Image (tube, rainbow, N blue to C red; front, side):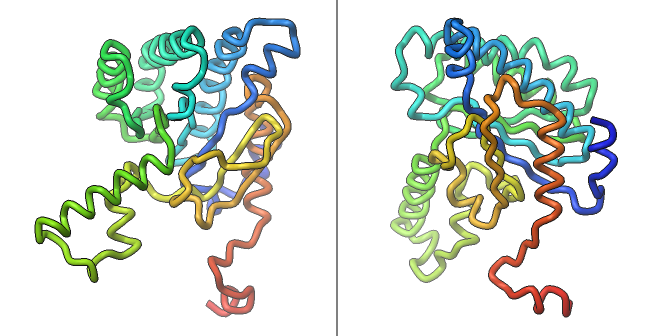
Length: 249
């Protein structure tokens, strides 16, 4: 793994990596285990990838932890996930502080059980002073929910006279998203074999590089994370321009 990390160009690191952590349930099913055991194993992978990202010099790591659609899963699984998420966060908070990792969250957090939300908020407050990598948990999150909320806020501003229709711009919309203080992802990774973005950061990943792997999240290693970064560094990011325009700068 050290060899792979040494191949990464520190001057071309993706500042923000977003991850769709998929495959916990299928990992467990393939081993004859309960789905909850896949989620438990997935938590250990979160720690592994958080440490790997921080070591590599990633500034922001956003993990798709629980979508708004996940509320439609069987109640028993939802309850297990909520308990597992906050318990894992509390357990990892001392190490986050030790490694200077700041924890934050995006999503419709008001839908979370009161106790879970309060425990999460305490952990975020405990790491607020950290000045290293920022770990962003997308909890009770979906991009369509986020964009809808942004539209409502802008509509209220226009209706109250605080803004005009002609002042609405991509920059204004971005300022009303839950990621307003976070740069757009440079790299989006999805594990588990599915090749779709599943309502995750749809606005923000407009120019992100995409990396898909069939590896289930519980088996996703630091080595494969570094391989994704290496592949990212081998791509040419043109942002709508031509290769010749980029080389002439």
